[in-house]
Image 1 (tube, chains in turn red, blue):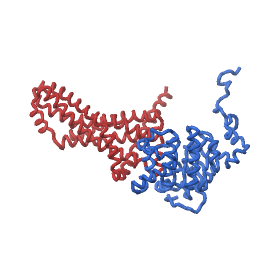
Image 2 (cartoon, chains in turn cyan, yellow; image 1 turned 180 degrees about the horizontal axis):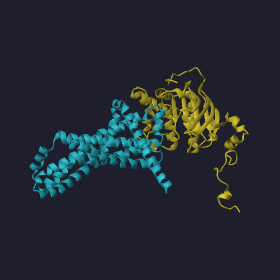
Image 3 (cartoon, chains in turn red, purple; image 1 turned 135 degrees about the horizontal axis):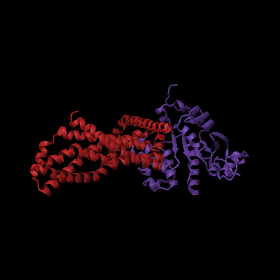
Image 4 (cartoon, helix red, strand yellow; image 1 turned 135 degrees about the vertical axis):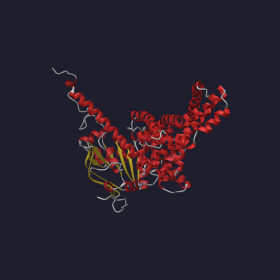
Length: 264
Length: 276
């Protein structure tokens, strides 16, 4: 009895130590990426390529999801607001929920599963097929040539994707609220314009998506780089990227919201 | 000892000198007391059974691993004292052919061969184009320069990787199992190519392989690595004539000999519980 308790305690301890190690390695990896970023910016075409594969190729899923989320917000918001006789405030509700929360968070979650998983799988397979080792043997640092451009490509894409998500969401809310249900178009737009503050709401939303972009990308790159070079290793790393970055997005969102909007 | 950067020294005829080298991975000894010399212009084969430490030795020569004890000199430079910059400078004069080519899958054949030139030189694009086509011509694949790696056969991928490895005109080329999984024609082509490139470019080639017949046909000298030590060495003719049991078993591919067929296990009868 005592022995099995000790064994399970030891198991928990080993897990914690392993976790702390990985966190340390990830931080070291992140610092190395930043250190080698100068080279990437001097060869900006590498970053442009990654903006295409992370950002442009994620556009469809982001735009379509944004439209549907906005349409649902329009329907749900209208039902709730009607109870208080303030249907015209639908524009505010849709815009604020998208710009402050749903835009950055949902776009980042979609980005993690679309672009994050692709980054992990690509880097993991490059490692498994010795492409990274070959690069090192050619005296080219893979962190500078492969990792840093992907990092900046994804980090630059993320806020733009979140902004597009919010814009499509507002369009979805407009379609349902104004075109379908028949709220006054002038009230929808003017109330939104009056209530949404550029610095408080929009900039904070952009800042959030920037932070989420960094978190998702570092996790995705590190998991790929650290993956055991086997089929199973790469598939597990891809799963871990999606799970860890989703949790990181939601956890960071709480912390950021607490500081931004409640003034903790 | 302070780290030194790479300064080429053309004084010695030996491109690689390994003296009393040992290497342990997490306290598990992998290589013990290795002595090896490779002269300029030679093709050297490192042979032995799988898991015997051949690839580890190649990785040590390439600087991916550091020896635990002993001296490893490439082009007169002590590898264990090189810093990252020095190692990278030395590697620009090395080419390595990985087992399955390790071509960059997102780049075309042309861009793969152009990769080291674009990374390490400021040559104009027209000159890079000429150089790439010349390297591809040397491996017989000039016509395939627009293909992607996924469109190549295994043998072609390795030849493209070889063109990439010689792009910067190295003085040392390392080959990790260049014959594994090739059909007989590709195998002969690759073997001839290694010999021809070594002779025409004046490079030193280190070939890790277990393909005995192809190796004995085209190399200058063979080192047999078994269980972490150099078990035998000699020219192909010496090895063919050798009566040493290990070499004889290896050269003739026999099941019985010093290298057992069975992995160590408890007695068969005990395992099947047949004992009375």
